[in-house]
Amino acid sequence: MTYIGRFAPSPTGPLHAGSLVAALASWLDARAHGGCWLVRIEDVDATRCHADLPRRIMRQLLQHALVPDAEPAVQSQRHAQYQQALNQLIGRSLAYPCTCSRKQIAGHWAGHGQSPQRHGERVYPGTCRPQRGAAPAPVPAQPHAWRLDIAACLQRQGLPADAATVWNDRRLGAQQQVVTQAVGDFVLRRADGLWAYQLAVVVDDADQGVTHVVRGEDLADNTARQIVLQQALDLPTPRYLHTPLVRGTNGEKLSKQNGAEALPEGQEPQALANLQAAARVLDLPPAQAATPHQALAQWTDAWRRRWAD
Ligand code: GLU
Ligand code: ZN
Image (cartoon, rainbow, N blue to C red):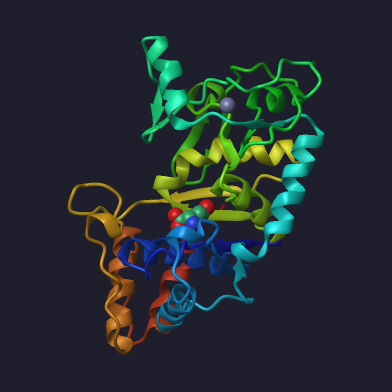
């Protein structure tokens, strides 16, 4: 089997205990399948990223003996590929421009006495969505976002707008989401020109030939959106495995906001200790090892037995 996996850190901070779990799990899954392991620097949101962090992250991975099989891909250098994908969606009448402000979207829901929300982001009510079959509206002169017309994407697959998008997560089992209701027509490119994570990740996974996505469980509920987008672009859907999360002091996913510290740096014993902690989160037995390399070899065998599919 051809297996290509990836670890896709956002360089908003150095690796911490939580991101090491995702890195270790994706590395182990790739090695256990005799596959390739790639790293992708997800710096589309330049306002939140620091220029020196990609190098620091790569150094941290190396210290933990997590070495990618190719030079890392860098999202900020892939504007042309994202634009091409957006053009393709526009050409298929699957994307449309949107000039709504956050305030207008909130105002819409206030008028309806309800306000569906998702992670603080309100479900888009479809204000700018063109009528089905109508000629596309002219592209507005003022700054505008581009949104995906989910119902049109589903219709292209012969499905109704309320069809659930389903997938089978290797760890979480059967999953589903009615994307039109749970999320609505999400943004592909923001009005300020930044590419949305959903578009970038789908284009990159396809361009890098990624067959298996292994990432933190906090990202699981992006999967249905990404599948809709893959289908709209006629791209294959990889297999997904979402790993357990390291929790911060407030019980939420460990992040810079709730106390994630950069991984303690040091010599091999420190790297090994960091890896042992990450392995515990993944329910792997403690390694009887003197070096990161030895530990990784033991866990690769354990992982192969457990996550064979
Ligand atoms: N860049 C994302 C993050 O750091 C991960 C994206 C993914 O694995 O799909 O949270
Ligand atoms: Zn709009």
